[in-house]
Length: 398
Image 1 (cartoon, rainbow, N blue to C red):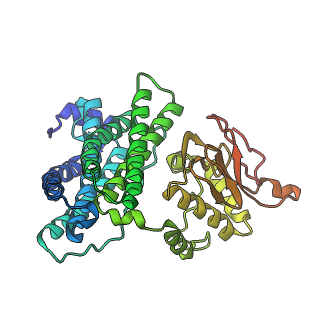
Image 2: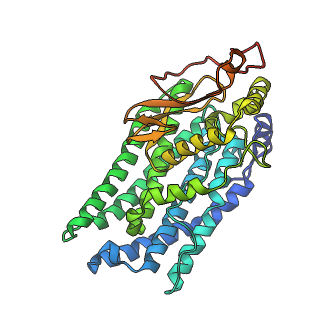
Image 3: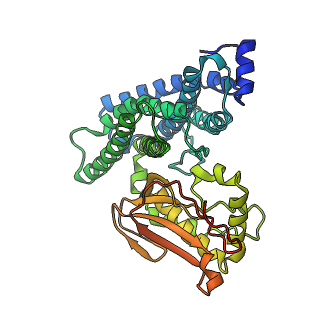
């Protein structure tokens, strides 16, 4: 519900460092068209089912409409839930939100209109052709440590909202008479749905009472995985031909993209760092110095970044996932991952359920050891220990 903040609310918001939500409210209001579009989309989908159309046989224009409407819906829903959860957590500052909430909601809302426009174009033009590579990924998550509880509540509420619509779309595929080669695809879709559902339900079970930071991170990781799974699932249900796409060809194309090196404009020195903790390290002078010295000491940064690229590709294609226990304690504070499918990264063969972190360090170079870049397998646990691993400083640990 929209509300004009009173003077006391504005004062509290200022004290808490919150920013105006007026822009977000405008996006929320404009996005109401998304829910109307989703209803029309589901009506079209039902018509095809009543006629007995095979999901693979739906015309490409309607498939494009279904996909674009789904993307707009999930993005709009998550943005709306972020606002609702923040207002519910602190009604006295309705109309204002923390900066991290404003940034995350804006990242979502600004992607809604392009998908909405594409869906409406497809609805009105029988010759429409999608101008975007799909399946698309969700926008980047804004780093916050720990993730604010209202964000967790919002993410959980969003999974509940999209689950019902995902189930309805999946029901279209569960029909008699599909040829055997399509049954395997349906089972794959069910698996994606089941994983998203189990992740969200497990997170819901953890989201109770007062929680330590480590549990915040576990919940956040599970809910992110669930939302990313639902986002991808909706696109596959809309355009089932995407199930036949070969990830390896996309990996090859990604590998050919030019790597941005430390000497290039626009290089991000925090590219190896767990995105959820970047804000913390950027605010730490010792960490900034350590990361600068790390790259200055790396004799082959292209090789270092190539292994990081392999890890990111494995994450994108579902071979690995965030373990939900935070980051490795040593600079550059990389994320800890858990393996879902057998995969080779940095020359190391990894098996399901193994945990690993990307350990990059120049710490041993002062003693004649080579620069270290290792996909390190281990049994990781949350810790408050910090090691800056800076060979140019005698103050390594905190």
